Length: 227
Image (tube, rainbow, N blue to C red; front, side, top):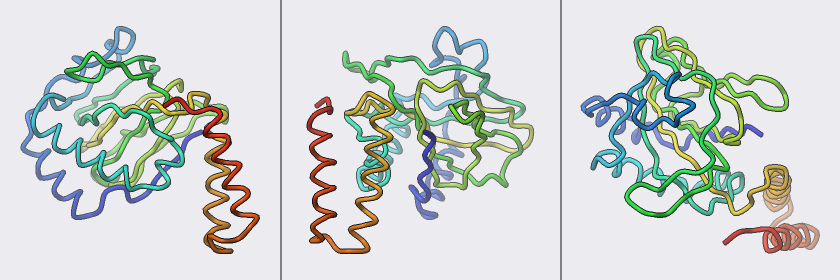
């Protein structure tokens, strides 16, 4: 399931990000590509070990911790520190699937990539092309969101970034290991939680039937979650 989350970053935050990234030192993105993807990856990235990348990435993690829709959809256990990329001058990233396991930088810890995430950092009017194309059970979806919006999708999906033929496309990208590794079960839990949130808003937090549904939700989490 492909899930969009609008307004993860505010206009003020985006202006700061764009200012910092305009002065950043960019390097060949192929340096972080897996063996399968390196031949189809043509973009630029900031060194993930740089102070700038770490500061901006930490801010994104803080923002996400306060995003109910993200928590509901991802049920995150671990999040790889966010990275940053730039596409321009025909840059693209051909069809590929993300590596199943990634090491968390500067640690011996590993992360299973259950979900892939992209936060768009500039508006679609700033560039031509650059759609994130995702193949899922419903066919191909083309994603090109407003600045500050985020898309979340299974890391098992075949996907690509189409060539940017004019302007620059700025984004942050990262991976999540979910407490619920099964995609189907995670989708069911997301749908259930969204319904509970709507019912809570309509009926109030003390509604008996809503509380029963919430209890079922948390029972399922306890039964299936990795911690």
